[in-house]
Amino acid sequence: MPATPQPVALQPGSDLEREIAALATLDLAALRSRWRQRLRSAPPPQLSRALLLRLLAYRLQAKQLGDLDRDTARLLDRLARERLRRRAADERSRRPKAAPTIPPAPGPGLRPGTLLVREHAGQVHTVTVLAEGFAWVGGTYTSLSEVARAITGTRWNGPRFFGLRDKPGMSTGGGRS
View 1 (cartoon, rainbow, N blue to C red):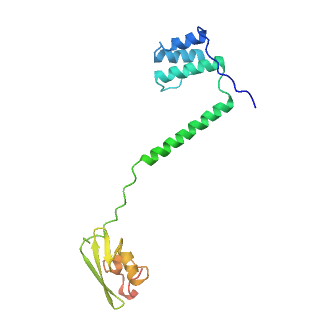
View 2 (cartoon, rainbow, N blue to C red):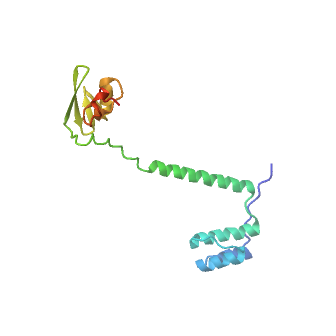
View 3 (cartoon, helix red, strand yellow):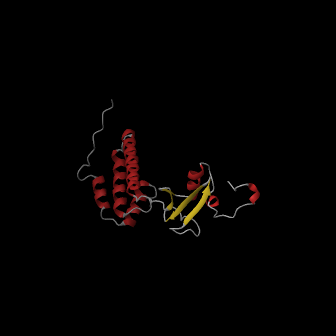
């Protein structure tokens, strides 16, 4: 097992310590200029003065004293990814839930309280239009097609079953869909 490197402290009065202390007196433009001079690259755009100061101080120390070893850098990257993943999950859980879906209006021209009457197999069936669906024999249904299916036991177009649509030619024998 390799020995863990011991942290290196800045020597009081060292050139590096003086340079880092001098960074605190610079404005944003001067910090960007110092970045270009010392690191021979463009500074990251859109960083605040405080963040650029800390990042430049770190990079100067890492350049002179040595950066993180590969395993530590990987560990920190993994921890950062996990933290971002947890934060995203927390934000998703805090979002307001979608509003419950409101069933569509019962149909064009059908107002709550309207009674629909249909005879089927020798029996008269009465359906009441509600604001949130249809009532038939003590049950509530979200569509007329569900009511027609409950009455007949087969799939029907509900509005057609109750005579709310134009019927195709009468020779088809009932207009079942």
